[in-house]
Length: 98
Image (cartoon, rainbow, N blue to C red):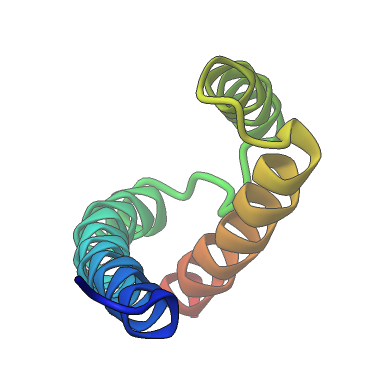
């Protein structure tokens, strides 16, 4: 029989291993997303389109908030996260415009 402290340490290690795997998934997913948004930025620059698309951004934020609510994730957190990602995408798009 395992003592409670040892069992707690084992469970903690299992959770941390899962978190580490999920962090890797997030990083690789973001990298793939940015590959696509950089292609979009190049296309926008080639066709003199603005780096920002406020209507699209608003649609994406609303969509992500809905998905977050369905996933039992705080929609306000999802909005903040996507706003951060969008600001980074726009920064990349602006660099292509130069």
